[in-house]
Image (cartoon, rainbow, N blue to C red; front, side):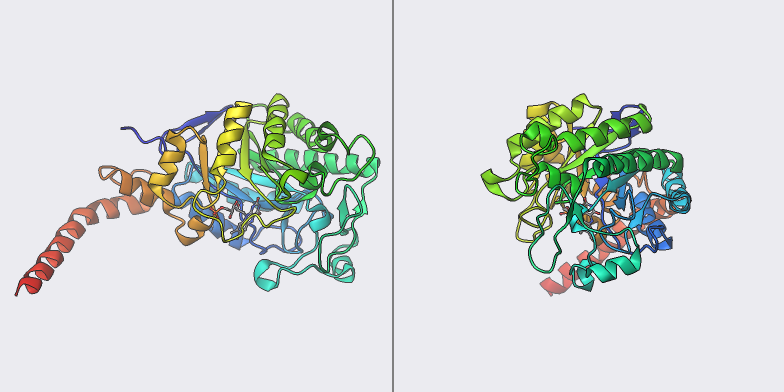
Length: 388
Ligand SMILES: Cc1cc2nc3c(=O)[nH]c(=O)nc-3n(C[C@H](O)[C@H](O)[C@H](O)COP(=O)(O)O)c2cc1C
């Protein structure tokens, strides 16, 4: 039977060579929002590894929107130019590359997970950038040492919309193939979506239509600056962790329908971030696949499933069941950046390392029969010793 995992997928004018995407993963390795050699190697290894699409990490659309001081950003010429070699390398490996545009809102200003994951003080934020502050739909702070955010005025909301649109234009100029909008994980747009964090009384709060307004304004503005030939993905938290009081799966189905009407091609189905962590380790294999499946069915839109997808058969089954059109891998790709190539070799013994980097392929092809013989004789020796 033909494997779906390695079948192409055409979205607008982009044809992905298989159904495997690398999920966006913040590295906290930038200075002044400018990507570095680290990002070239980090992203480059996934391009060598055979994924069809590498989604670059959460990228701030403005200094105010940074989550951490070491985030990458896309609001200056210097930042825009620094992405170009990364994009070019991916293209040299026939790998599509996307960028995830984000605004952290009230979650702005925190240390990386491995540096304590704690919020910065307002003084520390000011020392990084004079315009860095926490903003949100309403003046509700997160628990612990997080400070109360500034509730955005309507003019400030328009500025946020504009910063997404300008970043989209820069992303196109830098050569990105795909744009992903980060509407998940309790970032600014998710804060507007969730009734737990959006307590506004104006046209941006209250009903679900009002709470979706910022997202739709961003999508519409971005679509005007992002070419019609290029795919637009939205990452959403299918549920925000707040149960029936919060943003629910059925809210996500409705949201996905509206996003589709406004030119979104794929929903990347994550979860949490308002009332729970999106990467809580206690969850099992494919824990977010049911969200993708429901949204795909309910909104008739392409979806990307993500979350503890680690096994080739598991990934193939997700596609075969019609639960998703694409699978994204995150931590498994940190463990094995060659996961797509290894998976292809494991699933198709005759694949002959097709898709592997050109300078490696012939060596691996020549090695394969020699390796098979060597392993067989080791096994024979072992069996003889066991019998002796
Ligand atoms: C190191 C790391 C950084 C992450 N950074 C982001 C990010 O920038 N944007 C985002 O939407 N999700 C981020 N995530 C979540 C992943 O994209 C992914 O959804 C999550 O890890 C679940 O997939 P997995 O089980 O395959 O790792 C991050 C996860 C990890 C492990």
